[in-house]
Each structure stands twice: as C-alpha cells, then as structure tokens.
Image (tube, rainbow, N blue to C red; front, side, top):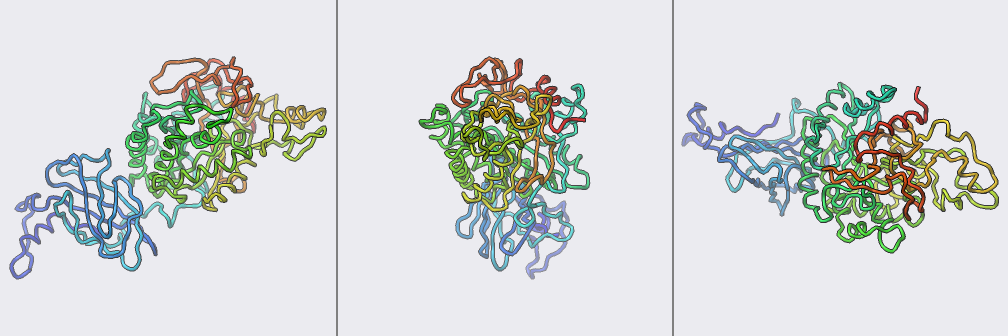
Amino acid sequence: MSRTRTALLAAMALVAGATGTAFAVDPGAVGVAAVPCTVDYKIQNQWSTGFTAAVTITNNSAAKSSWSLKWSYAGNQKVTSGWNAKVSQSGAAVTAANETYNAQLATGGSVSFGFQGSYSGSNAVPATFTLDGVTCNVDDGGPGGPTDPPDPGGPSNRVDNPYSGAKVYVNPEWSANAAAEPGGSRVANQPTGVWLDRIAAINGAGGKMGLRAHLDEALRQKGSGELVVQFVIYNLPGRDCSALASNGELKADEIGRYKTDYIDPIKAILADPKYASLRIVTTVEIDSLPNLVTNTGSRPTAVPQCDVMKANGNYVKGVGYALNKLGDVPNVYNYVDAGHHGWIGWDDNFGPTAAIMKEAATAEGATVNDVHGFITNTANYSALKENNFTINDTVAGKSVRESKWVDWNRYLDELSYAQAFRNQLVSAGFNSNIGMLIDTSRNGWGGAARPTGPGATTSVDTYVDGGRYDRRFNAGNWCNQSGAGLGERPQASPATGIDAYVWMKPPGESDGSSKAIPNDEGKGFDRMCDPTYTGNPRNNNNMSGALPDAPVSGHWFSAQFRQLMQNAYPPLS
C-alpha cells in the first residue's frame, strides 16, 4: 500500500548524519513539532486518461479554524472536480481549501477530501505539500496496492442501471407506519424514497432518522449483494413556487444557504468511504424546473413567485450545484425530476422543459455527465398505461386529443410520456444512455371503479371518461387524490428506456394539509389540498379532488394509506 511517510520518518531525515546516512531515532526523543503536518495522498483509481485521489491531512500544530493545502504537479495533471474541499488549480499549482462544515482542524486532528483529475503520460505524486504555508511531509506515492479497498465507482465503473441486480432500501420508519395499518404488512417491505426536505432532516429532525442513520441501516440491509438507497433532494430556495403546501424553509434569495448548509453537508456524508459500496440514487429537486416553463410570464397559469425564481435564476443554479457536487461522488446516481405527462406533455411545454433541464445540468460547474437519468410522476397520480383508448382514436368525428380530459396533450399516460421525453432529452444534449424512473407509488387507480373497457362512443368525452383509469377531475390535480391506489410494485428494467418503477413518494405520506396547520417546517396551506376548492387555471378550474382531514405534507395520513391499499392495481393479495 502506498502511504505518506510518517512524522517519525521525516524526523529521522532531519537528524541524518553529515555523511547522509540516517540512524535510528527513539520516537520519544522526537516531538511532533518536528513535522507540523502530515499528508496522505493516495491514488484510488486510475485509467488511461484520468484518476481519482484521496487526501488526508493530519495537523500536528495548533488548532485551526480554517485551512488551505497547496501542492504542484510535475506533469500535466489537471483537477476536474473535488469533494469535501474547494479545489482549484492555476497552471501546475493546486489549492484545496476547507468547506464551511470541515473548517475546524484540531491539534492531532485529521480531515479528508477527494478529487478527480485528468493526465497523460505519467501521474507522479506531488513532491511537496504546504498547509497554510508550512511544509508537511513528502508522499512516496503511486497507485494503491493490493490491500487497498476497491474504488466503488467513478467514470470507469458506474453501472448503467443501478437498480439492475440490486435490492432496494426499505425505510424502517415508513415500514413501521405501513405495518401498523390494518393489512399494511402486505406492502410494508416495499422500498420507498427518503425525503431530505429541510436542513434539519440531514441529521434527523423530530425524532426521525438522519441521513447517516439511513445509510448505516442500508449497509446492514445490503449484506453481501448490491443495494440501492433512494434519497429525494428537495430544499431549493423559494421551493415549489406554484404550490404552497410544499413551500420550504429557504427564501427565494438564499442560494448561498442552499449550497453551504444543505448540499455540501449531504455530499460530505454521501462521499464517506464507509458508504462506497452502496448505490445511492438521488431524485433532484422535484417540480422546480418545469415551474419555470409553465407557471411564468403571460400564461394564465403564471404565479408571481415563479416569475421571481425565473428572474433570479436560483432554481437553475441550485439544481446545477446539486448535480455538480453530488455527481462527484462515484457511487451516486443523479435523476432529475421531469414532471409528468399531465404537466409537460403539451407541445409548448415539452421541448422548452428539456431545454431548461439542459441549462441547469450545465450550470454551476455541472455537466451532462452528472445526470444519470430523469424521473417522472414523482409524488403524482398519472396512470402508468391507459389501455382502453389511444391518442390516435377518433370518436364521433373528433380526435381523442380534443376531449376535455386529454385537452390536446400528446400523451395519455406516464409510460408513453417518459419514453418520449427521454428521446427529447437526448436531442437536447443529454447522454444517449440516460435512463428513466417512473414513480408508481399512487397511480394504480384500481378498485371497483376501475374501467374494464372503453366508454360509450356517443361523444369523445364519454369515450375517454368512461375508459380512463385515472379518475381525477383534471390531470393538474396533485394533492391527496380521492380514489387513488397503489401502482406497480417497484421493479428494475420494466420497459424500454425505463431503469425502474419506484415508490419515490412513500404511500401514506400527505401531499399537504386540508386546512392551515401551523408548523415549523416552512410548509404553507394550498387550496388545492382543500376538498371544497373549485380550482384555478392550473387545473382548468376543476374541483381539487383532495381527501379531507389531511395533515401537513410529509406527515402520515392513515386514511389515504388505507384507500391506496383498497384501490391498489395490481390488487394486493
């Protein structure tokens, strides 16, 4: 194993004789002050044009409230990205400075960071390191030996579909809630997403497990096989500008806090080598980017707060920053939220939404390589596949697209939308091997009211309304929908271009409260969660279709969970 020379070896060099021969030194006779700092620079993974490296600094001098490590390369190495430090390069000179969360460096304490770089020819380890201007020891370098742990990911070995051949993490907190409901044990072992919807959720809030606790439990569940653990990254400044129920804690201009207090700590935990064997899937900022297309400007669906977020650019900046930072972790797979067919499926939304996603994916240092795929229908209810009619059907002289339900949309369901939108994203500049996820947690629409065939052909509306599985008043309805059921169980590679069906929204967790409920989570009251609400332009002024007596978003809603089980499709046994 290639390791840095220890402080003792450095001290031995200092007391070498005049002839240049070193002699044995009693460790107790040499104080740590002889070497104020040691640096362990180890190449973890190397391929023909690039490498990843891990660096650990040990401080043997006075405690520090900030730190900066510098070195220079003898070859043509270029740092391309870093994690757990701000890594920059000018010519051959590299500087790695602390992040806000790891600035403290006690006497005898250590701090670690990593980075990815490119090179050609040789990739020699730097000869000298300085910590705040003071020279540390010299690393004798080279790639890790046979006893080094294998690198879990990176450009050379991140798998094409993380769900393939892997178990998926079962959140024990959600599982306990589900199992406590009558009949809930039938689904309590299903995997669901873990929502990091505020800064406090990182360390655990309200007695709930924090990020590390979930990752530790994921390692326990993993055993000797592969395991995917799913997290929803959801705390943008001015979050969800068109839906008050899911507003967040950060104000519209607090992009700095989003970066330093939310994304950076999440990345630091995910990058811990302890979790390198997990496949970590992130769903990045649901609803944010589509809002900038559909709910701004002169459209009747426009919302003033969405215009604010489009003008200040903080949705684009925030998503780009998250993709950049999280994408640096070799075993993280970023999936960006792509709305759903009843939101983005119209011609004037489809292309522009893909374009703004490309803009975000190349902002704040991110590249399209930081995006592994996209997810549709997150926390929504759009049917996976409508089988009783097609978009090309004509009834009573009118196209199905002219029906009130379809309303000129080009897509009837999530599967057709996800597959088509994937092609659009590739055309917009994303990699051709991106995969799609579809959230099927609440789109089953089973039960006694599920149609068994098309509706009457007396008009295009009776034909569509009589045959559609999705029984919402309007596809724009999103809050605690009456009549909904559990959808397809989570599974890998279910259809062309689809990496997995997932339950990213944990069934039984509310979308929002039916009335205003004071809370310390920054979540407001949205009339779309009120069963008496008669609607707005975003749902064509239909009734909201929401269930009564719902709690604040994210809180357990027993009545909803029981309905979801009752109306599950495929049915529960």
